[in-house]
Length: 59
Image 1 (cartoon, rainbow, N blue to C red):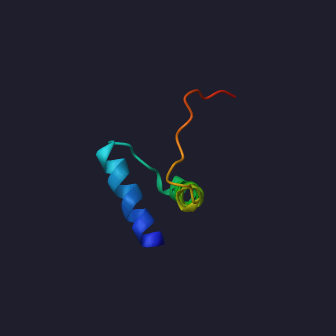
Image 2: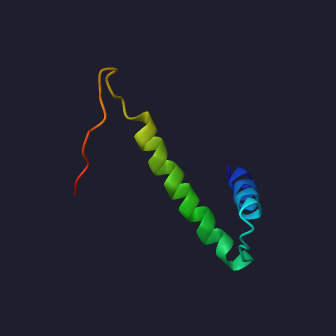
Image 3: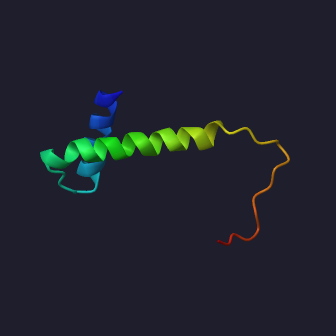
């Protein structure tokens, strides 16, 4: 998976014309791994078909 993440980082950095220094790549990869892990938790959370989104969000 690390190779795919490295490819993704390179592709996105290239598409955005954003230089990513080699020293920062491990931190960028680690952040992406955590973000993907959290996204997977949200994606796998079962919701009934009749669930509706909230009309108003507040904190």
